[in-house]
Image (cartoon, rainbow, N blue to C red):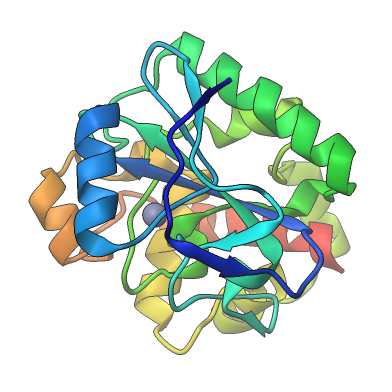
Length: 232
Ligand SMILES: [Zn+2]
């Protein structure tokens, strides 16, 4: 594996139990320049050809998640490994197969090394829905879930769950629902990204949850219930 050591990390005081997936709208060189400019980092970055680069030792706390929340826990940098993906479209177009395959290889190692549970593979937009839109609507969560990374939905599951309150369902999954609209868009981006419009990189960066999903309310509720059913 290639190495590009970055100095943007500190000591890790918590056990690793989560992986956060990000994307950057740059190639490797541009991404490193951007990390240096903003003094941020991740543990790994994968280019569009599937080359993996290590930036920060997993045992250190890389600075990738920022202000974040999931399942009543804040500041996910403490307990997570952060992986960046290079994508010119900022996750609006499909990710190349070689890049996804490389990611899966890396995730298998991490899952094995730290016994990471299936439901702890998350998008940056899941844990920071008011601030972030990465890795974008085209990230293949359904495909990754088949390999054991991230939960997916099964409409048969909704029978187990009678709850119909949107806020309760989103927080059961793990979202911060203080801003309900942002949590809703993050959820739809993760589980029904195909219903979202194609947006420019600047608009995704400036207004990550300014979206009007084309998903009928009853379908949205069914989707929400079937994902939330994993967490009861
Ligand atoms: Zn990110």
